[in-house]
Image 1 (cartoon, rainbow, N blue to C red):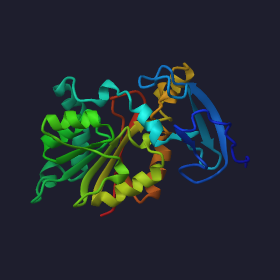
Image 2 (cartoon, rainbow, N blue to C red; image 1 turned 90 degrees about the vertical axis):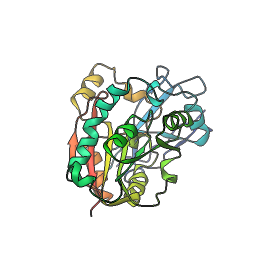
Image 3 (cartoon, rainbow, N blue to C red; image 1 turned 90 degrees about the horizontal axis):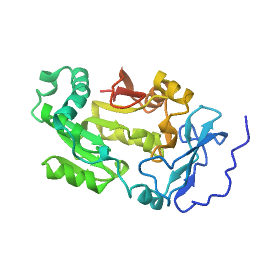
Image 4 (cartoon, one colour; image 1 turned 180 degrees about the vertical axis):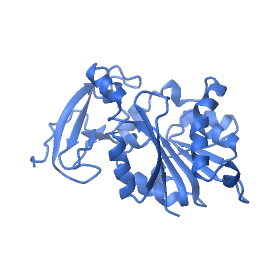
Length: 281
């Protein structure tokens, strides 16, 4: 086993903090993977570090960034937003994009009639809701859907359209009643400590509730081809802290008490995977 990785002095220490150990298994034995330039990332500006440094855990092989953002760092990162992070675009196209996800959830809930048969509407919490398109689509199917996002701009835009949204970090979220479905689309890779986020999702979910996670799959053919061509944008994603494979994410979910029931490959972006996991009933 290698000695614990010793990071060099950090010129951006006010903006970021180095991981002391692996965020998945707590091992202090880490190795540097490499660094990627962040200057081409849409949200990057010259107050942010020009490179993103990646590490590998010697014990569990998890790939993650050497640092995570402080509050000051997040404030700098959030100075800009992707166009996809604010409401807008073709609403009918977005309805079709999110329709398969909601239908997958309904099938796992026993079908539409079964899911909607109760005296109260089933609830759907979309964490990191971005432009709110999934919140709107889930609402159309009959869910009492709420979008949660750390950015004020998209939350205000969703609320203006008459849908439910709140500005909050997920770890601060509370629910008056257990939630039926929690979705984390392009969220878990942003979380500093994924285990804590999954534990919190487990607490919020009703028994038998569903957790849906979507993020890039390091083990996909498209990821490998992008790496081969030295054209993989995920290595410079300044908002990402982790890279997962299907196997590593499934293992992490199982360790947090979830049972993975469905794997899917959507087409919303490159190398995407989508896992549906259930809290035991």
